[in-house]
Length: 157
Image 1: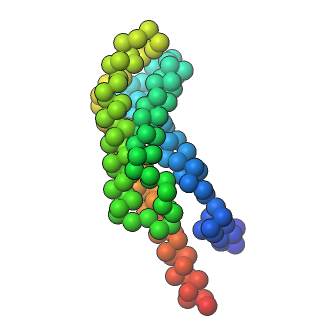
Image 2: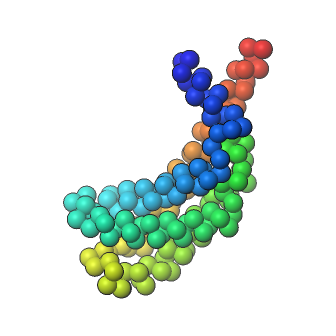
């Protein structure tokens, strides 16, 4: 319990997790959500067979989501003070990224750069939905832990 307290003290101090860390965490969630959904819809063996090309396509899709994160500044707020407005910004940012991904899917996959990669629209939609839920959960859990930590420190003082 003492180690958990040290971790939360460090995390909730003003010197931790700069905005670029939150930005990269959000991008990693998007990328991993796409990989997870592709593996669930298709077989894991198929995903492993084209993993390099699949990773490149999903990295491009993640860049589209990064544009959305940049447009709506989802990383600017401090996670421990997240509000419904922040959750709304995350939704809008991921939606922008999903729309850009859907619009460029055929352009990317019709080129000879990604032979054998077939991504359906449902992969993009489900990957975006899963990532929205995970990003919301990260923000809500962080805020809940911070609020509980503050309540505990107010009770002990």
